Every structure is written in structure tokens, then in C-alpha cells.
Image (cartoon, rainbow, N blue to C red; front, side, top):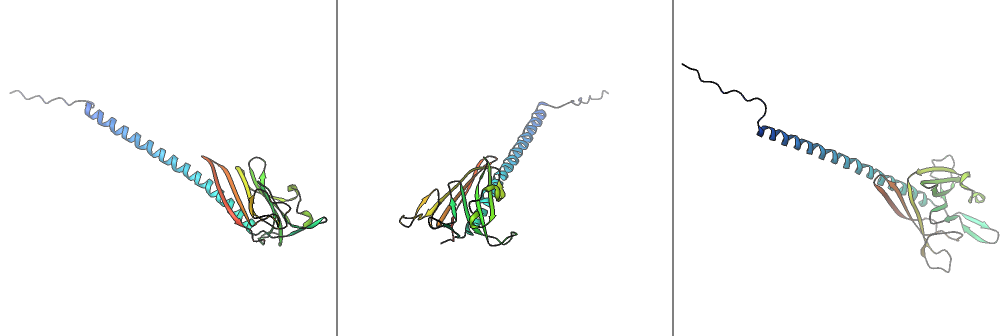
Length: 205
């Protein structure tokens, strides 16, 4: 009696099995690529968030300095005293009350401005009336950022007794300080510029 032949086992993959395997491989590649893109976007978003935090922190620090402004007077031989305040569109020098954490106390001449093409610095010096206009080289510099794009100031108030209050881009040689200061900075971020701004009321009246 002849035994039945067992069918030979097929070696390798069938076409259907190969297609299924290729489909699973393609799905895996797409999933990995999507995860990589998501991780990249999350990293870039974190960097942008860090830049925004930096800009906001700088504005808060500068606003804190301006809020401690003090109306020191500068005597003039040819006229009435003027307030120790010299503001321009991209720099501002004033007298502030010390935080008390410095080696000195009392009043400090402070200037906020651009240092070079990208630097944002603050300069400080113990206040003396004769030294209010001292050069920056004679003051202590504190670097705030090396990615500055724009620094702008605007001042609101009556620069003279016969003038109505208004916004202007400078405040020099006035008898009284401005009532408000509008501060805006723009930094170069990893994905473009980031901005922060504040309007500060000066307690100097």
C-alpha cells in the first residue's frame, strides 16, 4: 500500500506575508519620523519659550530699577535747577535708590543702554551731583543680554510748565521728571525676534 505524500513545506515568505511585513515596516518608520518631528518642535518651542522668558525677565528688572528713581536735582549756574534725568530714544540715565544689597547705600546713578551692536547693559555709579554725567567707562557695567535687537524708550509728561503732557522720545534738561516711561526691547531668538514691553510710572513727582 502506497503512503500518501506529504506536501512539501514552502520555504520563505508568501506575497501576502511580504506585503504585511512591508506595511508594518512603513508604519513603524512613519511613527518614528512623527515622534522625531514632535520632539524637534517641542525642543524648538522650549527654546522660544526660554527667549520670551529672558526678554520678560530683563524688562521686569529694568522696570524695577526705574520704579526706584529718585528726583535728585542738578544745580545750574545760569538758571534754575533741573532734575537728574537724561533720557533718549535708546538710552536712559537717572538716579535711583539703592536696593541695599550693594556695597554702598543711598543714591546710585544708573544708565540703561546699548553696548555695541548687540549688547544691552546697565551702568551704575555712586551718585554725586558733579558725576551725574560721568562717562560709561567710569561706571560699573552689568551685562543684561548679548542678543539685543531693539531698545526703545518713550517718555510721557510735561517737559516745561507751559506745555501739555505728551509722549516724546527724549527727556533732557527738564525741571521735573516724566510721569511715565514706556520701555520696549526686542531680542534675537533662535526662531526669530522676541519682544517684551512695559509702561512704568515713576514715583518722582
